[in-house]
Every structure is written in structure tokens, then in C-alpha cells.
Length: 258
Image (cartoon, rainbow, N blue to C red; front, side, top):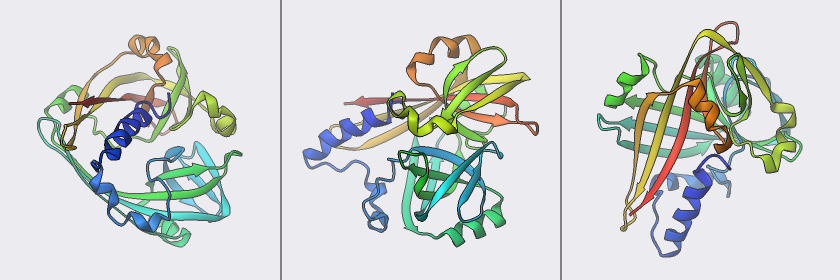
């Protein structure tokens, strides 16, 4: 399933757009700077820690991505607030960026999220660096044992899982495009006290085009996750200092059209 339900949601939104309703108004802010690049059409989401002008090192050093010489670089500003009920408000804008800008920001911050567009051979031809603020006041955070959403080490698609660990592909992986990701698969061992959670994002679209997203968190289990593998599970994972997975949060998306 392509990026979980993201493609499905966009198809439904496209139908409404044909009727003259624009739902994702925040995504239009400075979008012309992207030169036609779909900001949600990326192949890989990763947490980047270093960039030497050609090679991106991501996800606590576990993944590397080679960039083309003429790789396009952009910036996304993403400000999120989630209230006590789990309802989200977002402000998004886009801007020009450069490899030098990315290297400078990484040297100052240590890491930042990046969104990558890949050629058929798995090389990066465009990337978007993410600056983001994130405030989450959802009451369901109490289910997470003080875990802070958004602080994960990496985001991935789970290919297989057992009591010892899991095999993963980059976020955006599909079986139809598996050759693109063939060199980018990873294996992770679980720490002894690994914990499992689920974060569900529900997007509600009203008849007048208004859009609302709601976030809910709950505990999950290895057994339950194993039973849902055929659903193309996306997960945020946290790693310890030896590269073992301490926490897995399954990310699920639902869409409701009213």
C-alpha cells in the first residue's frame, strides 16, 4: 500500500478539488518555489545527521543516500499544534535552500528531517529539509509512558518482524517499486525492554471542504503488529546507542469524508 493511506486520501481530495474545493490551503504557501515538485510525493523520509555535498548520512548512521550532482534542494517550514482533544492545526510554507544551507544547519542542530525523491536507481535527485516546531497537548499522550512523539530516530516500513527484531524499508517503499529500494533495506534488533505503541491520524473532510486531523495514541504489542503486517505498516522507531530498537510506534492513517 503506497505510503499507507496517503495516496488514497489524496485521490479523494483530488475528486473534491475537481469540484472547485481546495482543501490543503496551507500547502500553497510559497509552493511555486518548488518548480512543480509535489511536496508529498517523496520516496523516503529520514532523519539526516550529516551531508558532504554528495552523501547524506541518516537515521543514526544506519542509512546513506547518494545525491546526484544537480540535486535540487528545498526547505519546508512546518509548525504543528495538537490540542487536548488531539485536533491538529498546521502552518506550512516552502522556501529555497542549498547544499551549503543544509550542511550549515546540520552543523548547528546536529540533525534534521529530510524528504527525498529517488531515481529508479535509488539516487537522490531532489530533497527537502524540514524545519519544524511541534506542540502536542493530546490527552492520549498518557498512554505513551512519557515517550515524546516526533523525537523518533527513523521512519520506515516494516517488512517482517519477530521477537528478535525486524526488517525494514525506507518510508515510501512499495512492492511495485522494490528495485528502487533494493540497496536501502535495513535490519534492526530489539532491545530487551522494547515497547510498542500505535499513533492513529484521522483526517475528516467536511462537505464544505474543511479539513481536520486528529491524533490518538495507544499501546500496541508485537503480536498485534505481526498480525497486521500485510497492511503495509509504517513505523516510527527509536534506537539506543548501540543501534537496537527501544520503541516502535506504528503510524496509521484514516480518512473520513462527510
